[in-house]
Length: 574
Image (tube, rainbow, N blue to C red; front, top):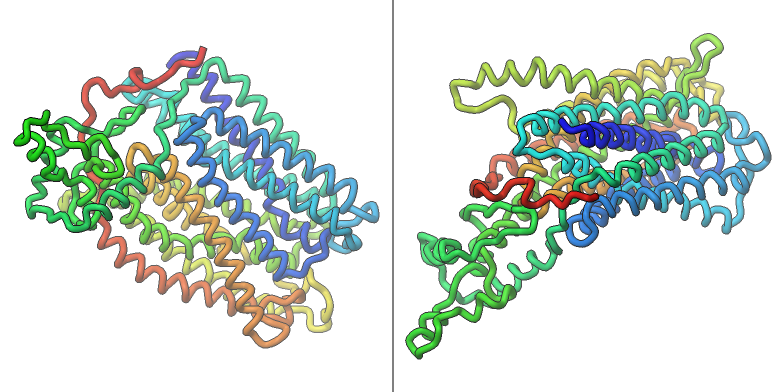
């Protein structure tokens, strides 16, 4: 592998590790910042964290769209990382200058005072600038790193596989540092130090990214996918009276006539599939060309000059792919509701437990380190043990290990187990609660916080099956011109999961008997019932998912031609 590729690989991994450290340095303890510094109650803080986290992933759609359509991945990553740095610097300044008053406030026993509307507006502007920067950057950086390797070259192709492993390792190391070291300082009330550390880390990440500019390979954007999708819908609607032959001859003839869809990055044609017959009409050639020939014309179909009247089969299949992916994607949203509890209600539950070992205080947010360790362990277990074992057992049936859809189903099952575990822990936490603690919101039980370990470990195991499988599934099933969109779908699932979580908390607090299931003093509530509700909803979602997975039809690509290699489509930046 060339020296420039090694430098690019190191820069990309360090960039991701530092950026992840910066993001989770804010996100992992944001719920505690909102309760201790801003003065919100547990339910409002959990809602606001869910909304903020959801917004981060909504912005991933914007980043993917700009990257694929206009800017390219390099420019998109650079611009959104700069916005990320600005947001973190603004958050650090506003928190230190306006919110952490009186001086020394913000720890567990010393909440801060009230704040003006202007100061709160500056705070929310800062955290949502941070959300915009991180969200727009995340779906593109891994793909941009992969762009630096030529799949046609055996050595670089092997290095590309190794890059993804090291890239994911860097992400987890950055998250582990922020969840433990930064989380500890922030839990002790040193919020300004934690936020400035995040801002410095993000700045170093941006500098590292820009240093590699002269050596990067750049792929040209493929054009606006929304216009291609709209063209199919409009063309099919215009020709709603057109009849399609049973053997699909009209469609196949059109592609065999040499009018093939090829994008600037060598995208493959997609083979025609059954289903969504109405959309097929967009690719049907009308008989106008035959009439032109009979009248002495040149026989050219005027539809072929108008993409809003005639689309390629590949273009039609792109729309079909999206429609088939949507039911699977919708079924992943409820899993994200379960996942988001780790950053909100799990932290609040941990804060209401015994968090001391002798004189050492364990920050509740740092318990998510067990999730990170679980992810690392179960990736090894799955790749080295479970997948080879399943492959050997199913070899006679012609399958090779778990499919992505099967892995996602396993992830849902483990998520149900995680919610049941969290509910059982809450039952015992209430059993060992301090009876005369009528107004306290922390250390309200003598049950050790380490009883939360099983629920964190189960969430980590479910991530390996659900999120890793989901990323591979959407990237593999998305058309070549919509690969970034496939990555953004994964992040958008997390986004909507956060919004649904916020909605569920609001509904539960409205309809449950006062003080509600999730009051400020959890000893007076029934958080266990909320966890069991999520387990029941996820179980129902699992059954719907199984139906959708059995219905799904996999995409089929044509093989690339000899000339469609990476060297034909890469623009080397000098």
